[in-house]
Length: 399
Image 1: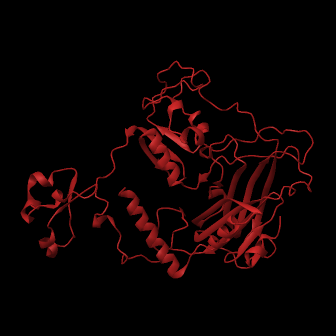
Image 2: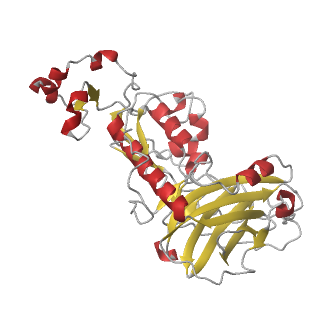
Image 3: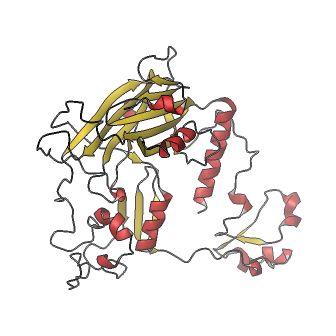
């Protein structure tokens, strides 16, 4: 690939050339950013002799970058509660149909006299909670009752003055960061924007998270391919692991599925299929069979709609996921296990490189490239980061 760092104006280190002398201790919090690119040059793959049968193995344990858009789309189509797990997967609870959205503040809920707060009938209501400031000297200000489902309850928030310092423990060891997360400066945001406007490269993935890095055996790889991408085999598959073993390391287990135009007539065996990110809960196995010639998917969903009448978009984007839903009663179980491999070949990037924190690194390859930034979170940045994580956890609990 072309020297992408020159076009971006970055001082980028070729990973593994210069290593940090000072070892990185375990359980130090780092911000990690990774851009995964592929080249748009049609001749980029023709100058190499690639193995006809690359050894492609998907990680058994993994995590995914969360996607609120996917979660909301799944909840819309299934009309049941959908939540995301810390590993980035989606749990669909078929026993919990979605309720109407929170209607907003009902002013009548707050028309109480102070004496009403001590009414036994009011205090015993399960959907209300007396707003307590915690000190008897403020009892005169207890003028109303806040419903439990009010997301604006003041006692559901963490004050910016909360006693948080660098030693404050967190209940998590990794946190996904969005592009709009301001607690830490995204180092590669400008590079991502420039590359998205380039005709030479395609940004396949932008990963940004914070992690208390540990040994490789304790670290879950980040999976970049999932069945929610709507394909039995996405074009780019695999996983990335960032860990500490005295020094920082990044381990790439990626492969690019191609049309094999650089090879003679040949089609390799199919690689592992992508991870299924959806877990069903409370789903009755087996449903009502319907007779129709309009579609091969002759199955009534638990919500009473046939598969082929799912909303436009979900039927296409999540077709692979839909066909593997466990409540199917068709003879083939709606499974896509036999879907032919639509590509002819795959090119792998399987390397382990030593990194250096505080610098931007570049891993080059004829088929793909990675730009990596790993930065220690320390001093005031660490305090701000921990305060933000604690506030996000409380906000999540109130949703």
